[in-house]
Image (cartoon, rainbow, N blue to C red; front, side, top):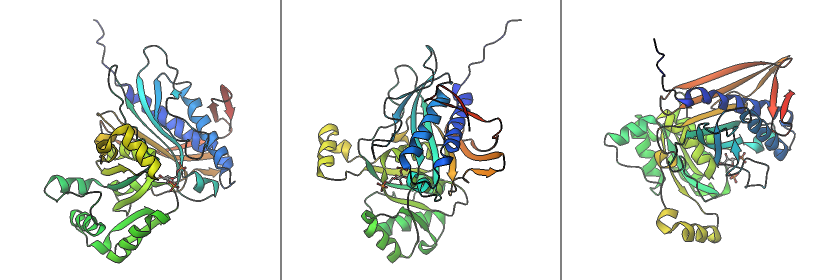
Length: 352
Ligand code: FBP
């Protein structure tokens, strides 16, 4: 009897390597929690993520990276992850080794290590949209709003007055506007938005840093958050899109140039229409292959942070795939007597 070769979907097994990578990043940055050393923490996270992938049979390219912002160490565009063996499956990768680096450096809640990936078949265009701006204007909502928009709720626009946006979201959720919870980064650039949400009467939750967890929250059942609104990092927007694709939520996103020089550069390189384009989840993460994975470093609305209990460290991760919409919460107990992590800097394993 001849064996039948069952075609395999490499995402199904490789997704767990992404969990290992963000877990190891979360564990490797622990010595930097509350130490005021953002760059050292970032470097430790990057070292652990790259080190895990040095042992993984993929050809991964960082297409959405971080690090340029503060000249911090980072995983940059074009960096390679995986062993790049001939024939290894090709993945486009988005990574933020720590979202909420300032929180972590200050020992505060809301820091996660986060990655997303899409398989890219030979000849396919990039699987994720690379945005040329540092910041983007973002508005993210959950599956109930997506459903209501698909069944007749008038569209929500990024330039619509906040009163109208909140009215539509409230209608979709069957709530009164004053029952809505809106999350926003606490930044001077949001002064008008902040005043407007307060005037309208919705509840406002201002956060210090880390807008991936904030923008994913409206798509999670029982998060207590109905809408994410405001200007935050562009790479974080693409990472958020990968999560929303698996959760059935959506977002509106448009590049938000910081000054005239950035605006002119965007317009001359992309043309005015493209520079002003409003993207939604499927424009940011193309195709069906999208995975999103995050591990909590310090507590957030998405995940508890790392817990140390004697000789054990406990990590909490979320792993999801757009193709199947399976959302896994993975609680891992790491025995520190035995736990080693492979670091790129050492080309070897090191005990934690
Ligand atoms: P990092 O921790 O990756 O530096 O980002 C933190 C963050 O709060 C993001 O979540 C957010 O998108 C961005 O910074 C906002 O930028 P800024 O702090 O410049 O307003």
